[in-house]
Picture 1 (cartoon, rainbow, N blue to C red):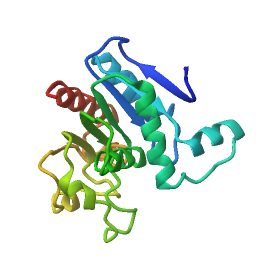
Picture 2: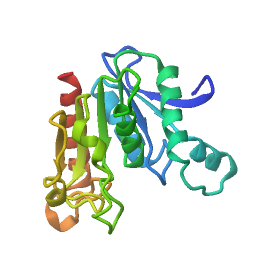
Picture 3: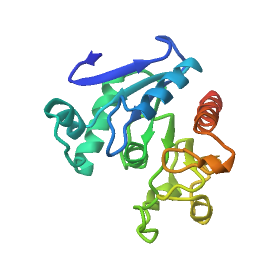
Picture 4: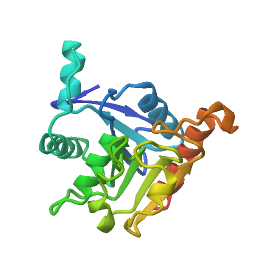
Length: 211
């Protein structure tokens, strides 16, 4: 649905204790299968969700041509605009990969909007194949209650790596067994994508219920 200047997709109950705003990852839109399943599943758990697209992805949708992500200042400004547009309190923010990372940077900003909690799905702790290029500096002092849902073998931050990082005491981590960056396990692991995704949604619902 169109809300103001930015397209926002709402899922879940119209009246809810929480509204969780979710941003997409770098390469897939707000209505990708991953985003759609999580929005629907969280809605079924009583959590109202709001999905939006950054300018580059909205242009890609309109023109049908792949575009690189916007620069960080534009991504963060878009986040602020969406928060103002949604307007409900308490405001909970997060997203998939890059979208969640931008949400965490906004929460750590010197003048952040009023944010009650942060939820990141597959946080990109470092670029793939470059574990020395960490994106964790701001996570050491993060103030809002935060949940990172991470696959145990995520190429952008696996369990062995992440457990060695210094993270804020306000950050909780839910590990998806044998999950990759999309939280999907290998067949031989004995775990399933459905099981991991449902477990992640349950963890998010439990976390938000404690806020």
